[in-house]
Image 1 (spheres, rainbow, N blue to C red):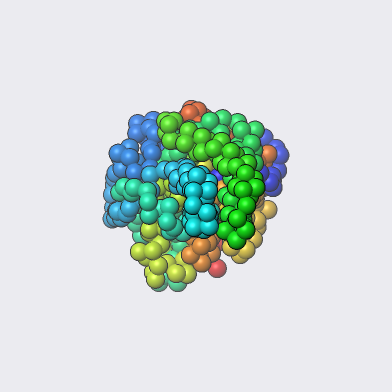
Image 2: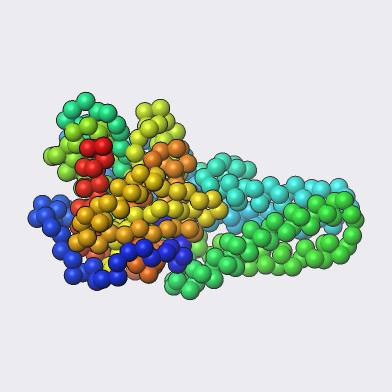
Length: 419
C-alpha cells in the first residue's frame, strides 16, 4: 500500500481486538490456510519488489493456488514503472534544471524555464492521480503480471464483483521509520515540494514578462528547498524491499482464501472476479491495466480492494476516502452496508477511517467509476503497523485480525449478493 497513515482519522472502538474471538469455526480453518499463504509469500518468497523476479514468483504461487482449486487461473502481462519515487525525483531534477536555464539568455530562456517548471508540476500532479504524463514517458518500464480468475454464481449472474489484493512490496525508506518521520515528510517534501514547484512557475511567468534579476534571486529559495526534496526522493530506491507480510501478503492471501471459499460456497447471483495484482506499490499499474482491458465487462461491477489487513491491534477497517491531491471517495452504499455489518456484529470490532494522504488500488476502482470499498486495517489511532519497514515480517502478523477481517468480508459478500 502507498499511503501515510499518520493522518487517517480513528473511527472505531478502542477495545483490545485480541479479546474478540471469531464466531465461526470454519472461518478459523480458512484463516489458517490464509495464514499459510501469508507465510509463503513473505517468508518462502520474501521481499517482492515491483517488476522483480520475486514478484513474478509470487504471481506463480497465486496461479498455482488457484489452479489446485480448479479455478482456471489466467495471467495478464503488462508494462509498469519500477519505482514510486523515481518519477518525483525526475520531476524535481527537471524543476532544478529550469532554475539553471532561466538566467542564460533573457526572455527566451525565462520562457523555456517556465514551460519546463510547469510541465514538471503538472506531471507530478498527474502521477499522483495515476494519469500518464511526460515524466512517465521518460522513465524505463518493465514487465509485470496480474493473476486472476472468475468464480460463477449458482444461478444466473445479475452483477459482478471484483476482489483485488496486490502481491508486490515496497522499499524501506528512512521516512517510514516512525509516524513522526512521515509527518515531517508530508510537510517538507509533499506539501512544500508542490508549493516550491508552483512558486517557480509563478515567478518565471512573471520573469518572462518583466525582466528582473530580483525575480531570479527570489526563485533560489524554493530551488534550495527542492534540493532537500531531491535527496529524500532518491534515498528510498537505495533501500531494500520489505518482506511485506502485512503490506500486502495479507491482502493477497485473503483474496486467495476467499476464492477458495467461493469455490466451495458460490454466491447465488454474483459473479466474483479475483485479482492478485502486480505493481501497486509503484502507482497501481496492475489494477489500472486490468480495468483497461476489461472495461466493458466490469463497467458496473462492485470493486473491493484489500491492502494491509493483518497488522496487530487493527481492523477490520474500511476506508471512506483516500488520495493525496484529489479525494477518492468510497461508494456510499457500500460504506453504509459495511456500517450495518459493523453494528450487527460488534464482536468483529469493525470501524471506518480515512486515508487522506495516500492511495490504494481502491482509487483505481473509483477513478474508473466503479462502486468501490477498500479495506486497510489502520489501528484506531490511525497508524498502519510496520508500514514499509524491515519489520513487516510474518512474526508480526495478527491471525485474529486476519480472521475477523475475513469473516467481515464474507458477510459483506453475502449482503451484496442479496441486494
